[in-house]
Amino acid sequence: MDEKAKRLLKFLKEHKEDRGMMADLRRGFSEATEDRAWPYVARWCDLTNDRERIIYQTVMAAYAHHPEVSEKGNMGHVLRSLAMGDGRGEDGLKTFDGRFRRLLTCNSAQEACQHLIGIIRAVAQKEIRINYICLLKDLWYWGKRVKLSWASAYWGSDWYCQKSHEKNEEEGDV
Image (cartoon, rainbow, N blue to C red; front, side, top):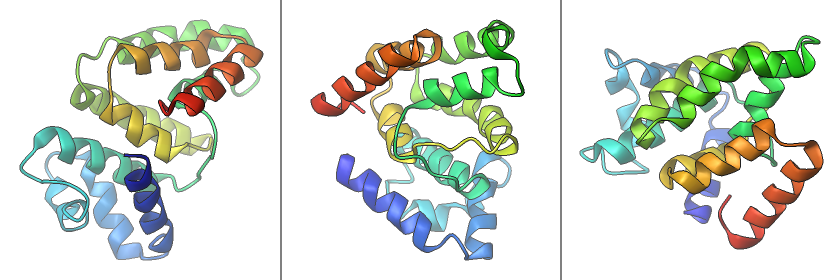
C-alpha cells in the first residue's frame, strides 16, 4: 500500500495544473456527480468495489480541493491544527471535540470518508497541509489502531504525538 499511495500522490502532483481533471476529481465528494471522477479513480482501484472506490475517490477529491501536501502527521494532527487555529488554543479542542469524536466512531472507512468531506473543506479554508499518503493508508486500514493514532495526535502532547508517529512509521503503520 505504501508504494501505491506514493504513486498516487505523484500522479496527482503531476496533474495538479490540469484544471479539467481537478474539477472532475472534486466532484468525487458528491454522490450525484461522483461519476465524473471515475475515469481517474478507475486507474487506481476496482470501481465495482465500493470500499476501494470510496477511499480512493475521497483522497483524490480531497487533493483536488486542497493540494497542500505535508510529509508528516496524520489526520489527528490536521484536526488538532484546525481546532486550535485562529488563536483558539486548547479551547478550540473542546469546541471541535464532538466532531472529532463522531469521526472516531465511524465503523467503516466509507463512513469516515463521508465525515471527512466537510473537514477537508474546512482544512482547505485554513490552508492546513494534509499528509495524503498517510490519509490513504489510514482509510485503507481503518480500524482501532488508526483511530488510536488519530486520537493520540489530536489530544496528546506535541512530544507524544511526534514519538507516536515515528513509532508508527517504523512499524509501517502510517
